[in-house]
Length: 384
Ligand SMILES: Cc1ncc(COP(=O)(O)O)c(C=O)c1O
Image 1 (cartoon, helix red, strand yellow):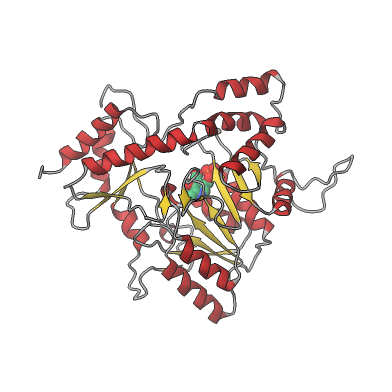
Image 2 (cartoon, protein in one colour):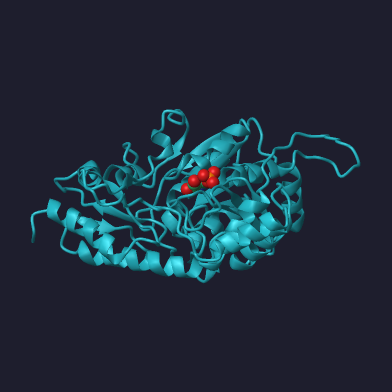
């Protein structure tokens, strides 16, 4: 085991003024689950994402759940969802007792395949049951192929929930991630590009929808001088302390995106000539480079775990790519539409899972630390 201090995959990175914001909240006694920093953080995040309204919530998963609940997704309904993602994208479909259907990735961005989505809609139409919503994930901080995906969803009149949990600060053809669907959801979990220790946000141009989701997030408590509840709500609101932390973090977003892009480029350059290529970047988008992900070539004599184990021996954290939802024991019985229409069980998401590795990508990582990582990885391969 190395004596060097541990390098984490994507640890929190303070921008500078977080303590000031949090101390102001403490000094003014706004340490309750209400307070002025919540409204300010919502306004600032809406501005950052080019949307009109925002609702701060306790997690990205809560944000997704509120969108489904707002759309009245319920038992018997179907929701389409990106297959290659974290469970927080789709578990809320089960919270609503609805049926998830998973859509494979496309090779160009690893995000939802428009070809597979098109076939899923055609099958849904034939069966007489269209989905109630489509959840499109912006994986690893890169926008999906929205021109094609939104066109298909518009054709069938199905609302889109953009799961931009990993993509704050990224954009698609100049439009900020989070603003591309009817609703955009963010996560401020500890590993994200900015963090509130835990938290999330829904953004939208639909004022009434955001108001309703805030209401549902506050136990659906009616505005009366006593506690009156006509329907089921949740305790999903973001705390004022977390919002204060988020305001400080948001000030550093542009610098963090810049630094993560530098880290991605340095890996790409260092791996030239090795059977290891970085996540493909689409010309339509400007990613936030949340995680630097590398893919082993198909015939490579290495497995992701060889690299992960070599880094771990030097006290460096790295991870496999998300395991696709259609391969999860929880979801294995659900329907899945592959990118390749010929079938045969192959999927892009499974191939990416099989050969992908997430490398340390924190914006606080020094060039020297990254060089250590690069040296360890390069040493595994016979030098060209
Ligand atoms: C794509 C995606 N969706 C949803 C979530 C859920 O967010 P949270 O952990 O804040 O609930 C995450 C991350 O954690 C995520 O990466």
